[in-house]
Length: 537
Image (cartoon, rainbow, N blue to C red; front, side, top):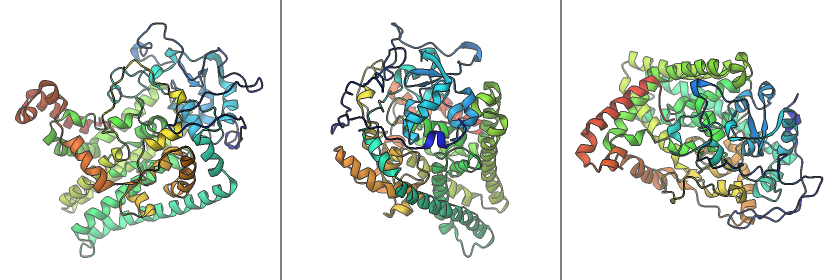
């Protein structure tokens, strides 16, 4: 592949098939003509269900002694070796390198305007064989605690069927990729960029005024204002990690970390490649961002997690970035980024933003303003942490099901599921202001259906199209949820007021929950891990 145009032009496939019903279930595809080919891969196996494991409960484990898995990507059930494509990918090397040993069918279909052309490009890298369990990493090269106990990537990755041109996503794409609407989107993206740059400049002005001219920026104004700016800039970073990871965007996308919560080097994968394609499924690791914190006794969570995150600012994130550099060398820089030169900007941006956060802390201490820094840190951290889970029903109890059972994902309309499983958030009521104040979560349902869009403003002007097409599928467009009044109380109750897992297992009372030796050990370990750069986000 030599150009972005090779995989970006739109091609409409006119195959008459019935529309999904109102429940979001996809009807069976009709017989396919000889020119189009049967709905099976070259091995005669449906690409949307994994071949039998021949009685095995689990796919093969990761090879011992750190031996890497073979360089294989799975698309529609077939195996490809995209190693030579990593450096050529117009969307950036990161997205190809990081999806090695995964099924990329959903990712390709939701992020590319014309997946059929992408498939043609991929054919030159085909291995001429079916994907097998040993091709897929059991835990997606992510920490095991982020997944359910029996999760394995081969069996539990949803295999949506995107071949039906009458499904909701294709109806929406046909309108948003029209030449006229693309021009509108480009104008809104430009406006979003201009405002983002202004916010970044204001961010430094506000801190400078507080430190040097406090009569114009008293602490009661400074703390909420700088918290809002950090959250808004994190929202900018939220959209930057959805853009092609090329050029300077590799550096600037790390502004996502400015609210003290994520590490974009890691979260770009977990958020963009695991959460968005597979929302509310077992692959969606965003559901488990509170996993570590829920190990703590309930009244320890706020102070201990706060101290844990201060550790991230001072030493933890630097340790983590260095560890990721070492891992890149061990795994092979070429296999992850195409070359060291292509991967370096990612690490430069990550180190730069975390150095900025540390320098800010040092400067505030030198000015004798540590408590002001701590106040804005606390407010930013906790609002941002709850925002992560505010736009989905992650706190809702899931109905019990057999952990070894595989849902019939191929019958589901992907876009319908995205809308049903997402909330739009409001902060003050204006969509364009809320887009920044919510870190990009205000136009959230559109963002989930069109994750390739480059800005929140593009999401906002696309809402009418998404809403109109959704109504044709019988999908209700729910009223947006106010973060402070509708979502925050429920989240605080669910994540901060419940007993620790140890207390539930051992049926401990309130005092024993907090002073049990195992609970104290867990608390100390949690603090140390923060300063070592270990965390669930």
